[in-house]
Length: 495
Ligand code: CS2
Image (cartoon, rainbow, N blue to C red; front, side, top):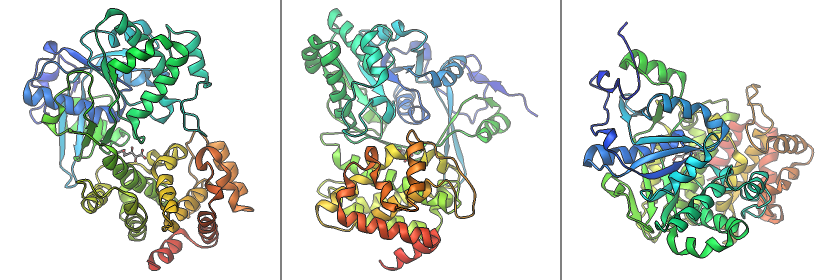
């Protein structure tokens, strides 16, 4: 067996020639971007684009400083520290040929719980122009019922009490922005890269609410010096599997403790609303636009919703990966009908977005059999995803008196999913912040199916929509009596 090399700066030159590596000198790079939440997605997406900018165009002024806030991020932090911020991106093409690239754009890295002061200092450094975030739904601290920033959440209350050792992004931003004002070094642009509608507006509104309580005298300055562009981010990035590590070691003599896998497709659209000089990401395929909403809705309601359907119904059918579920004709026909009949009418067609092309493209992306995106990843935290990916479609359709039958079926299938057992009698885990209530309510729904719609943090007042409730009740009754496969066939044949 050939000798393999630990991935780090020193060994870069020893890696085999077919491993593409940074062509730039990482010591020459200036950090101008801070990123909070160094997830797999950040590494396949923003860090990838930034690496391209350095590799292809020789820019030296767009280095990223990664920051992790959560205790659960300790592992990725220590691995990347060990690897000098380097990692391998494995792009898995549908034809089975992989593209292997070492990404070097994360040139600095902090673990906030260990050194909060250094993190605040970094964000307040005069070179920092942009602060980007992937902090997931939880990181926004929104109230489940109202959807507004929740001042009463424990970590927020703690940050208000101990402002110099914050836990949340709001605590950190407040301290850093205060320093920036004090030092008179100007503002910066804060970019959310999470899959939530109007992500920039959401982080802005929440930060303003936090500041009203924590530092009201900073509000005017933030209003004048900071912008919060909305964005649409897209690249399917599965959980890294042990097989990916072995493949790199055995086939490419590269020992990377946490590589990232992704699909070839990638899209990033950012509202053109920068307080500072814009990183020239447009040179490497990023789009800047005045109005993000048509793109954002298209992505959340087609791709993310499509994923959730494959995840929920695919799990019930006994599948384990997205491509397996996407190759089931009955299921995929259902997804296509849903997209065509219930999602498309809610999308803005006045903009230059080719919805039909987009739909075809995502079906092919779902069917890429090399990605092995697990349905467990997709179904995780469905109680946070369904209100963002599926319910807005149902609500819009109800408002204009249009079909919601397929949407109601998805919700009924999700109720059945929370029984925790597939059609073959195999159990699976419900991994969700609300798992207790989901499981309990799904159990109660065997006697009284309507109970599931009483989960207010998810459904709000949907239970009052008679047309929806009638369709949901029909769907759940069918799902309890017949196999999922049979229900899909019935519903498909009536279209
Ligand atoms: C997925 C997303 O988590 C999910 O449910 O739909 O992570 C999806 O893979 C990404 O948004 C793709 O850009």
